[in-house]
Amino acid sequence: MAHLCSQVLSTSFFTPKPQIPVLLSPGVACVKSFHQYRFLHIKAMQDGKFATPTSCDESKVRVPHVLTVAGSDSGAGAGIQADIKACAARGVYCSTVITAVTAQNTVGVQGVNIVPEDFVAEQLRSVLSDMPPNVVKTGMLPSTGIVKTLCQSLKEFPVQALVVDPVMVSTSGHTLAGPSILDSFREELLPMADIVTPNLKEASALLGGVPLETIADMRSAAKAIHDIGPRNVLVKGGDLPASLDAVDVFYDGNDFYEFRSSRIMTPNTHGTGCTLASSVAAELAKGSQMLSAVKVAKRYVEAVLSYSKNIAIGGGCQGPMDHLLKLKSNVQRRRFDPCDLFLYAVTDSRMNKKWGRSIVDAVKAAIEGGASIIQLREKEVETGDFLEAAKACLKICRVHGVPLLINDRIDVALASDADGVHIGQSDMPAHVARALLGSDKIIGVSCKTPEHAQQAWIDGADYIGSGGVYPTNTKENNKTIGLDGLKTVCVSSKLPVVAIGGIGMSNAQAVMQLGVPNLKGVAVVSALFDRECVMTETRKLLEVLKESTKIAK
Ligand SMILES: Cc1ncc(COP(=O)(O)OP(=O)(O)O)c(N)n1
Ligand SMILES: Cc1ncsc1CCOP(=O)(O)O
Ligand SMILES: [Mg+2]
Image (cartoon, rainbow, N blue to C red; front, side):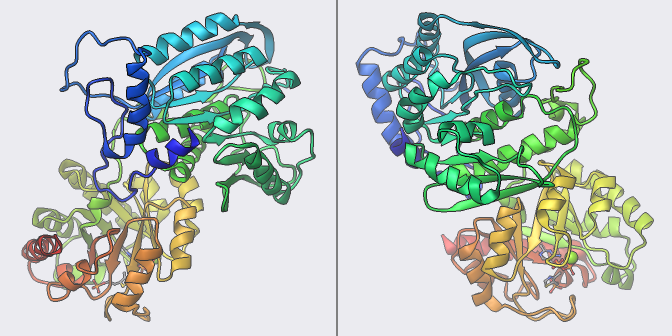
């Protein structure tokens, strides 16, 4: 399974419109990078492991699918119920195999009824033989027999990825899987896992009780658990004493990554582990690479925690979260698409003033000319006027489906509900902006070096603005990095890049023909806004850009 996963997760991060790598049922053609999976899948079919489909309509849309194998939580904060809600919120279908039924609420666990092993096996067979999931995620596995049954089923019906949340103790301290299962975890389940996500107590238990008190301990634990066999390990440090930030350590067998997020002060944390693991599974099912899946899942959990921090359900001290926060938003925004960076129009208050036009008129004209994203870079406008302009521009942008970002001012972005921000190296760190803005807003960061680019990615940015490529009068004292500097940033960046600085009709082609796939477009100020007719200039530049992509092909 681990071997398969390296194929499955190789889906390009920069593919503009990623093909959703859903698993296909017998008889339906398969996405290329899944050939290895398909081989096993077809073999399983030939062995008669799958039910014969009664109809095969190729026009049907297959959805990414996670199977969760876990316990039911009557309070619905954790377990199967959390998994279903998290997957639904992330746009992924979730089927369920229930291993235990627990009676629990916000006070604690009042009872546990373990489902007989053969009935767990029957549920597994029902789902795996008829509706193969992309990813299996495990939670509460209360007996060695159930662990063994699951491993056996997964050998019979291989899936693309296995996410193991080694649940042992409930948030309230109730044992959900005793020490007797540790051997089967270590010997059978973990070696099959693509990722295992223990908290500190679970990591310690897996390692025979070693104390874990520092980030250095977490790194050693991640490495030691990796040695047991899973391809990736995420040790969650939420319970780390004396730390203000919540720090998780991710280890992929080669590199360590530390994910830091501001601690959200709330009693409503019941089910965070299940939610995180399900969200990782959901992102993998959609085709993300492992590290990206973990990053996105963490962002989602942070957003849910923050959204739910004051909700009141139950009288106990471990409240649930409200996973479906997205449905509460009355505006459903589409996700950021790197192609949005193609023609990036950045406004400038001085230029608008000089040409006697309002910010709103400037934005309207740029959109009419074909700008694919707008940034309001209004350095000299009073905060109140900036906010009003942002709200007015947002209305226009929404009608045209063009994202609107705010330069520097996270407060204005939040107050106007703009689609995101663009921040520089001297602004607040992008991970803080992310904590403030939540998982769905777009964050761009200015980067001149590979180190900046690496940090932007770790911090959870969506794209990089890199420049000044050419000298410019628009931004004073700005170092020019040239095409070579731009290329160095692009090559080292895991994020899509937009070039900025002195770019216009005469040199846009040279920029776009740099030949690096993650360079997605050009950001332009004076070539559009320091001109009499913004719409005409935008149109002309769009033509140049389109032409350059034709030449590149
Ligand atoms: C798309 C894009 N890239 C870079 C910048 C520059 O941002 P920053 O470094 O914060 O400088 P100011 O624009 O704030 O002067 C940008 N605005 N947009
Ligand atoms: C904001 C910014 N960041 C780097 S260069 C630059 C100015 C780009 O303006 P112009 O497109 O007029 O050169
Ligand atoms: Mg700035």
